[in-house]
Image (cartoon, rainbow, N blue to C red; front, side, top):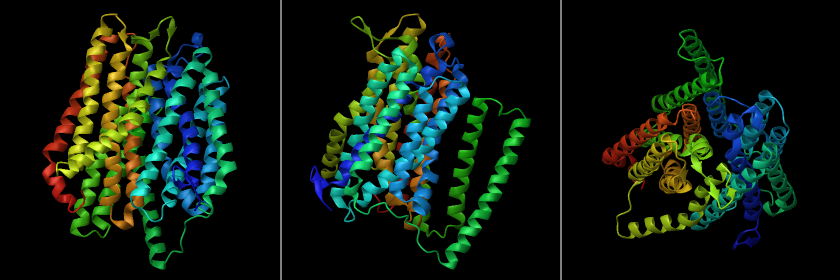
Length: 494
């Protein structure tokens, strides 16, 4: 394959810029999403109360990750990766165009459905082709993914600048900018996809043996029984008034229940009927605990776009001279920290490994979750100041985002790598799907948490932020305390 992008296959350039513009649109739109929903009708917003706005936000961001599962299946079985990326980008652009046209909350939700569906098609399959560029694997493949990851953060950085600035003039201009970003990405992909040669053109479906067909049929029957049981369970919850499916909050809670039940059932099924040997069984149990840790981390981290965005809007002094910085722009701190510190954190792990001091995966998870909690310690004190009626400086949020971003570097790439290593070979794809489900659950919790932020009653915010601190510290410490057991279960996986 032709070389032409930092000494890597020329196709990496196509994927780099396609993903960069997709992330420009996604993170740019996310930076203004909950602010637009909670803005009053007089301010050209939707006037949705924070509780339901947070639930809608959580459902949307959770849906983005959940839909990567059918998105990957469609590509493998019907479309092929290239068509999945193309059609996914088109759906994303249409979704942003719908959001760019003033309309009712129903039309707004329709736009979110288009964006989430398109992202579910595009995101897993573009990453899959990046891996296919390096059939030899090894360090060059890791380096290729590092370059690709840089495109993700460049896109999110510029998106979180351009979209919020335009949204200060008109919310729909911001959504329109996100649509233009995806349009540029699509044109770039169409014009340069020849550099990918034949990668991603045909579905990866292989002929099934009779045994596989029988197993698939049995799994389908089992899935049908589980779906029916979940419907009955949700009906019971509705009629016992545990949840209210007539509200966005109730629907989000129901989706959370479904995610948890399906995940628990999946792990139970794999453990009992997955044909695992004792070593595989222990490694799958470790993956389950990593799933829990990831969901806990993202439930705090992803509040950057929900509760912390509301705090930036109403309780933060964003004046730079005579110009007021849009609230969503503060989130650029995450992308900037990732770009600047990813090589440093990687260098630290290498140096520690050379001295045989590199922390193993459970300890890194514990550190990452505790760093997320420390970010909310900062916000606890910022909220106490805000509760007195004084707006806080932007430095409070920036320091929080710094701690969260270092936590992300400590946990996310490590968890991704560990999941691929720990998974039994016949279940690698499914376990990677479970990793995305963990992010989905975390995003949903983050949205529901934002619903508890009452901008008219800032005195309740310190308590809310402290609740995150407590569960983060307890969870992080538990990972460190149980590290010897988890490390033993991991066997030869570092």
